[in-house]
Length: 564
Image: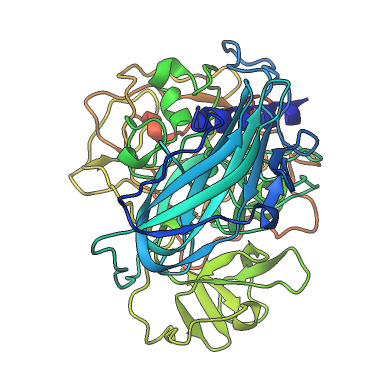
């Protein structure tokens, strides 16, 4: 039933995003605006929850995701809708004659009561990757940068007896004045320290239609803007645990908690929660009183999670035994060169600590994901500090990749992330019952330090303002979680007039064998070369956005947030 819960809430978020965009009518064309106009062939689309026939793209309940929402045992108000089945149909991309930043979408659709039909649009960036999917607003989508290749995606939902059908879609790309693509400069992807929970749900279906298998290797983020198609890896993350182990994996699901919380984007670009600082998941802010402590569905937030990890990532690759603070690079947000890897029939490939055969593994990269390419060292490619892959693992490398010994300083990696909107004067984290002690301006606290979990009766007793403030991204430390006392790392937090209370979150259920990762995965606890144990944090008070929840041993796998 919990898999049904996740699917239902996933669809709820899609329903809320679509609104009443189309009402069985054709949106008038913008006749005074010249541009490239085309009608994507619906029969060439791919996805789940939609069937294409000569009559058009019809919602298909048998393959749509979405089911009765189960509140479980959360402290919450009633969910906003009981059933919201949803379908997605990704259409063929279109290459344009001139760069554009604006795309007009005109739907001819039958939308009976209780149903919706809308369009998401994305563009191919100059560096080769895609922008995020942007929902059309009043039939128009504004892309974050000029692009010369555009793709549309239909979003159909139905809560009534009748199903919606899209008869025709017309897209018009308006050439932008002076929208010529600028030269690509190397920039690291956005990177934030967020709280991670384990998804599990083997046998369930993710938002993109993927059926979850045992020890699966994917992640979920709380926004469909960065949802990859089933089997695709357009949107991937590098997630690193406090022990130095990392995984590069695709985003195949939506959650936890919210479905419209693209917290990695600048505040004014966020789909929802524009009042929060960039890099702060709403679930983390809710633990300090934001939105009355509730998520977008009015449910009481039980943990500050900003990412969900499949079992194979959580247990086998990262060696986690409990919910934990992790460092996440949102790879599609940077302009570093990315190259796809191939694993010759295996699910993933080992990331090595040194550019030599037989070096110890410090993580994995999932098959077909695109990984950062920094430089070459003999027969190996460096993808991060102390992280290498064999050159033979790549489907193709840029011809101008420099040698590592001659390369210019590489873009920051999770070991030293660069925050795109760094807050001022961060302070070192502190014990929950200590007073704040701001550090000198521009002096960040020790990143990635681990805090021992509190006992079953322990709780934070820190008063202060509920308003969250952003945390400077913290790198994972080399500390290895203990089997008897899993820890969650605490990132640095900016100083504030007063500190909100530290949240108390349920821990993840231990894996098979009392939490020990199963055989077949990489051995946990191997720190990345060159990493050092972080110094003991100075005295101060944790703030809401650092999401350093005290973990209570023996608690449930995760809060039944409805997106699990």
